[in-house]
Each structure stands twice: as C-alpha cells, then as structure tokens.
Length: 298
Image (cartoon, rainbow, N blue to C red; front, top):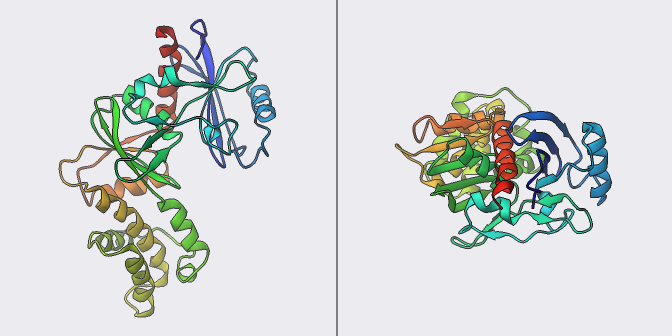
C-alpha cells in the first residue's frame, strides 16, 4: 500500500498502446504530467526500465511511490493482478493495491470481474470510476468510450453491473479491410448519416445484418459513399445505447471529452437527456488523489 507519510505519488495509466503519467501531491494538485506511446506492447517486457526512464523524464525521485492502472496488471503486463468482484466498493481500491514483486514502492490497481450476464472484465476503468465518484457522480450509468467501450451502472459507490462493447476495435477493423472498407475511407463527419445509423440501430436488427445494410444503401444509390463512415459510426454507437436500454430520464455520464466522447454525447441526445461529460484528465487526477489520501486511513 502507499506509505501513509507519502506527500506525493506518481500515477501511471499504462495501457496497451499508450501511457499517461501524473505526479500528484496529497492535496490533489498536479505537479507534472507526461504522455507517450510507451504502452504495454512498446516496452518489450522491460517495464522496470521503462518506468525508470519515465521517472527520469519527469524528474521524479525513486523514493516517490508509483501507482499504475490499466493493462500493466494483465497477464501480458508487468505483473498479473487478480480481479476484484464487483461487490468490492470502489473506495476500497486503496486497500487492494498489489505490490510489484522486487520493486518496493510500485503498486498496481486491480481490475474488476463480473459474471452477472456472462463473464466480463475491466482494467483501468475502475480507477476512472473512482475519480468520477470523487467528482460527484452518483448512482446512474457511466459510459467510458474507447476501443472497448464500457457501460457501468453505479449504485451506492459500487459497480452494480457493467458491459463491454468492442465498438472502437470493430470500427477500425471494418474500415481497414473487408466489404465495407472501400466505402469507409476518410471523410468529413456527417450528422445526417450518423443519425441514420442510430435510427438503424434502434430497429434492433442483428448487427451483422445492419452492417451489410450500409453497403446496400451505397450500391442501391440510397446513400453516398462519403456518408458511409458516419453511418457505420452511428450504427455501432447506437447499438450500444439500444442494448443499454437508455431512455428518457436516464442519468448518464460520459467519461471522455475528446472527439470520441463528443460522438457518444451526440448519440445520447437521440435516447435521453443531455449527459454530463467528464474530462478524462480531471477524473484520473481525482482518482489518484483518492488513492493517495486513502493511504492515511489504512
């Protein structure tokens, strides 16, 4: 666990492809930040060497404790950390940090696993959810867009249930090769085509059928090829919303203020009231502050 006397720590969101790092003091102020492409796949297994280089880049002393979240705790990461059951409150994460063997002061945040609707897992999102709670997000649904989007129901400071959608990965694969690739080239975002994709998703047809419908619309001259990319985007994101059952009155928060988060916020308006959009950096910093302050109460 984080030493109770620590007045600051280095928090690292260590993903598959990218890495974000923040030096935060106990009061919550961010002293330094850094982002690079040194994700799990890029370091070639030398996590200790990569962390040492990161410390040097950020001028962080070796005595400063490090808390890492994300794929760093997976089977392919620095050290595999067992998942927690969703019955464990998010506020208890500080007491479940796993020490990295042979590297004092280095800790990994565990992910969560659920078996409520089949098996599902998360790594990294739990830290963001802790930050969302710290920023005042209460009971309701939190959407974390990304390569693998998460839909999480929060209740009483716990994860009541969650579901993962391979939306970002599927969109990238469809655009890179296969039947739809030829009509999903780079193009301007089209609001009408995006909305048409959402409308198609709301019909509840099998996704594979609706995806082929994108090509059918183009070859039948019902849709210009330049609109296909936006249509497929709306279809895939709309499928998430349809599956979630989001409707009028739903309390929805979207964690991500980038372009992808904006797409989800736009889609939400077709299903429910305008969602709260949370800045990813602010959320992660709030989580680190919670973990650091939580060490005082261990």
